[in-house]
Amino acid sequence: MDKMASFKPENSKIKVCVGLSGGVDSSVAAYLLKQQGYDVFAMFMQNWHEADATLHGDCEWEEDRFVAEMVARKIGIPFYFVDLSRPYRQRVVDYMFNEYSHGRTPNPDVLCNREIKFDAFWEVARKMGADCVATGHYVRKEVLPGGSCRILEGADPNKDQSYFLCQLSQEQLSHALFPIGELAKPEVRRIAKEADLPSAEKKDSQGICFVGKVDLPTFLQQKLTPVEGDIVEVFDPWYEQDALYRFQQDTLSGLLREGADVERTVRYAPEEKILTTDGAPLGECPFSESALRELDDQTLERLAAPLRYDIRFETEVYRSGKKHIRKTRYKDHPFGKIIGKHEGAQFYTVGQRKGLGVGGHTEPVFVIATDTEKNIIYVGEGHQHKGLSRFCLRIAPSEIHWIRPEKALAPGEMRRYRVRIRYRQPLESATLLMRERGLFILFDAPQRGITPGQFAVWYDGQEMLGSGVI
Image 1 (cartoon, helix red, strand yellow):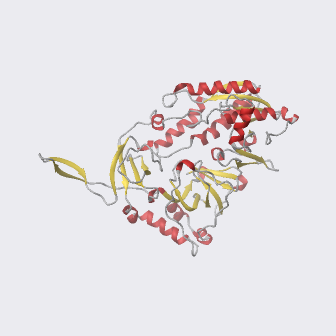
Image 2 (image 1 turned 30 degrees about the vertical axis):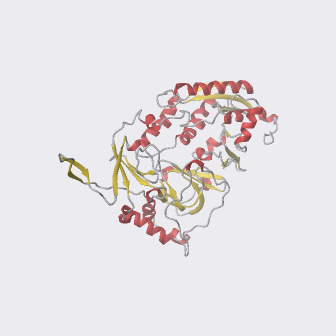
Image 3 (image 1 turned 180 degrees about the vertical axis):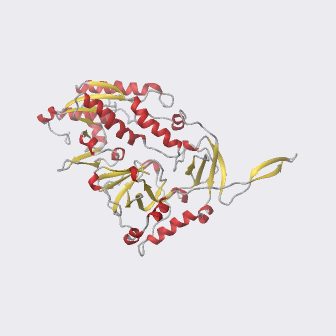
């Protein structure tokens, strides 16, 4: 096991609690720490009791606990169980319900790490004598000479999980260990097999953190009531007459460097195989630096604003059939068409393709916006539909989080970073502009499905510097 650190006697003085989930990653994390001489104990956390919405019934967590206990026995470390379902519901699930009810899409895994694994779980571990907690995340941590910690992408670009740790603080990082961050997934599997760990062949977990794989609408219907509404398809002519869309496109044109150009809609990329762009350099900014500095906050806010669709449909009466029965239908509209019904706008998210139940289109149909107040879903046909693409987003001042506060931008500062707006999305070159009204992220190329409630995360090289809620 060439990348495994050698035994260090002084490590035996450091007591580490490993969050053992029953999966291969946390199992190998515990095994490596034990081999390196740490005083290790394992703790399995249960964060959910209700099985109504899970696709695998109520035995999934019990099976995970059983495997985790067998792993701990195999490694030769103490095993404990802790029920954190109450703080999990209060800090993660209730937040999810609230966000979805307002038409936003939260990331429960980011919240689980910030609120549970490195907070509530750590508090229990600390009371049991732990000096650190360790997890099976594919991420690297470095302690700088001054004592502050920085987070680097995992060595395996296909498994990097730094995105999920984007909200951790320096205090949380100070007692965190990530033993497999330098390893690739196949190597982790090999170590588990050679050590004969019971989880060696276990498939990776999917779904909501510590809840399991769920049918999301069914899960959300525990608190959010289904209400039928319209699905409205938006046509190209709508954009030609919309003042905000024209303003955004004209502003982008005015910001371009001489001779530079940008595509206005996202190029198609297969969604099933999105990999990180590990180590990719920042591209040359297509926008003029001086023009960016001259932008006032009001212009930036309009540039970052999502489009608001409001297409009013009128009805007309017509006669149908041999008996000329009077019926009502919607008049044809140049900007859009009602093409179906849904069970609640809060159950859908921008960029979503599956679950719409509409046909009759040559290309796939995507959600481009939701209106939870009017209970309307707006959709567009094709990967390059104008409504799928945006260049700019804003993060409110209260939502900006810097992992290393000393790297924070001051109001008026501007810096180039690589950014992603969802897990497994390639890192994209962008310019960050800090203003009193918030942090504005202007991408070099249009981004697909920028979703309110998700986290935007920015990197300097391989270091993850900060994040914020869109």
